[in-house]
Amino acid sequence: MTKPLSDTCNTCPGTEATPDQTSRQPFVHKPQEVNARSAEVNPLSSGMNSLACVSPGIPDSAFLRGDVPMTKEEIRWLILARLQLAPGLVTADIGCGSGSVTVEMARMTAPGQVYAMDVNQEAVDLTRQNLAHFHCTNVTLYQGKGEDLLPSLPPLDRLFIGGSGGGLPLLLKEGLAKLKPGGRMVLTAVTIETLATATTWTKEQVAAGTLTHVATVQVGVTRYVERGKTTMMAAGNPVYLITLEKPAQQPTSHTHNHTSAHAHSISPTRPTLTGIGVGPGDSDLMTAKGIKALQEASVVFYPVTREGEESAALNIVGPWLSPHTQCRPLLFAMHREDQQRQAQRQQRSEEIMAVLASGRSAVMLTLGDALLYSTYSYVMQQVQAAGYPVVTIPGISAASAAAARLNQTLAEEDQPLSWIPGTAGREDMGPLLDQLPGNVVIYKLSACQESLARWMENQHPQPLLRVVSHLGEDREEIHEGPQCLREDKLPYLSLGILIRSPRS
Image (tube, rainbow, N blue to C red; front, side, top):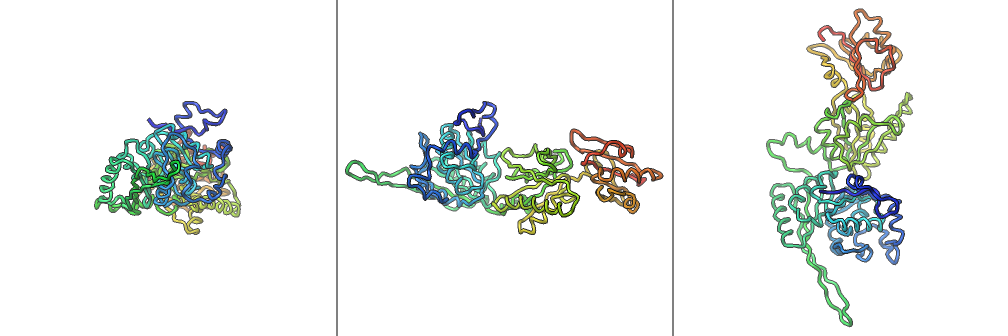
């Protein structure tokens, strides 16, 4: 059974993790912990100032050593070069050992996230120490099998497999599934059996068109070694490096060609904003496409109206979120002044674009449908204007969900149907309703509660008003008749359906 490490450092006094914490949480380095653990030795001192620049090839002597095997520096150079690392990439190191490759990946991809894991607890402990030693704060560290842990990780730009623990076939399968289109995978082999398994699998994937074989090379390093008064040549074990690349466009069968364009739009290779309409309140009403995009996201933005406020949108998607997804609030305070609202939307758009500029894609959640009375539509326009691609995934609208909840037909045959926001009739809803034929759906009903009550009192015969508040949530409320308008103030998330067509 795999076991993620605690996010509390067990090597620091007074921060021991409980068994429950250790079984639940991944270990994530925090700056204050890193500084405490690395105060004794500074890897950038003692003539090593050249390491202040981010380049591959940290000397082996700079790493903390133990009984765990370490990938030698010359081999690391080639691994890192084959991976083609860049800042902002999301990467994983399977079989991290001493953490030498993990450290170099973390330095070269920051602020991108690195996920490192090993089945050996001693290896995980040594990797943790080396991460602290080199001040690497962008690594999540696990103890467990790669094939068990990979499915829960976000999509990867780069994957290095330095050890498989005997489970290479399944590990390769899970690694391919997790790799983004256009992503790279590098694996090393030191035994004939591992090389044979990897080579056979590679040929199968290349034939299927799911991978491109970039290269397989054998690397041997020979060093000068002083033996008394003589110098000998000491050869290290040969290592095989296999480099693979996932095509940007995956092959599809003839029976599925009609869906390929939609499938690729969810996993774009460029940093992309994806807006997801999450529906009105019920997690089960999330669309399959929205769930897929959500599970592939590394950063998810959710709207709030006050700092520290519980987010209805985030609660809806909670069951579908990966534990590794970074969730960030977007503050949209209630302002009546257009200038304040526009400035706020610009600020929130810039927060999202900062993530896109780092090379990562982002998701923005919005209640109901993404493009119906949604703040997302303003953000979408700003992001598009800045030149970033945008994908919008529609959600079930509150009107449709409310009608289904009430078993209420909204319109049929040639009946007209109007959708309006309550803010449009804040002072007097009457003139607007008098102009609209047929049934009317009123969003943000609380904004026009009093003016709607006055209008209904003067209608003969009086139309039927059905109101749903907090639709799909545990606190859902359903009201019928105009009397609910004269009682307590309705919640902000209230929707009214005004029925005045006799056939409904």
